[in-house]
Length: 260
Image (cartoon, rainbow, N blue to C red; front, top):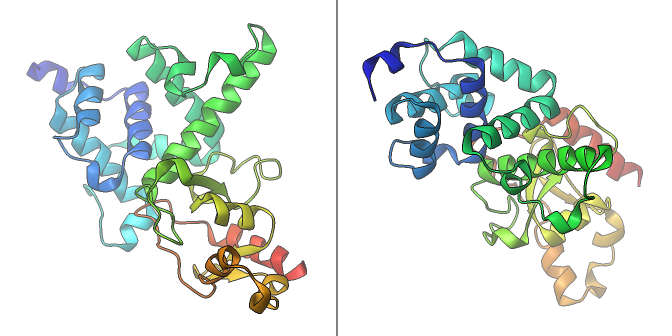
């Protein structure tokens, strides 16, 4: 890697690609030995150290990391702020663009990067394009949420990826603006996800697990499986390393549980 390439300013596309990786790997994995950091450095023609610093520097913009005293480099680049703000003003658009740019740079199909089976897609046309965009953004959201929680259920600690769900706090169909926002997500195992989605469980703005009274009042009649599910009532969730769950969205979800 020559010095000239390191002196050139980071482009908008490079910032977006760096942010894409920042969202997809645990914060503790942002270092120069990580193969994915090395891969991105090669992809954009930067040194591994430069990419590692760029990824770490997004931390200065992340409230979850600032709350833990992790501030990144205080004198970061304007492009980091612009990318961060652009994502939060329109998460769907930037998430999709980041995946599209990654596909272009790697030469891989966008469907492959998002792990979409061809069997699930129409052959061609607007219907296919629309479905690909939807699935790409769903894939980005899942990867970002699981990375934030170190691929562990925030209630039980289950760490089997195949059993984990990136649960939306505000449902996908209702809150379009926050569909791809990782702060609208919780990493849950499949059973607690189902309870959360169906309104049998919520998480308070303080991060406490709360089950509906309809279940709690019949706890003595519960079979073993349901007793296990309810045993986490009143427990605090494990908070993510970044992208803290949005308290206003949790408040709305909790209010809906009370109405039910």
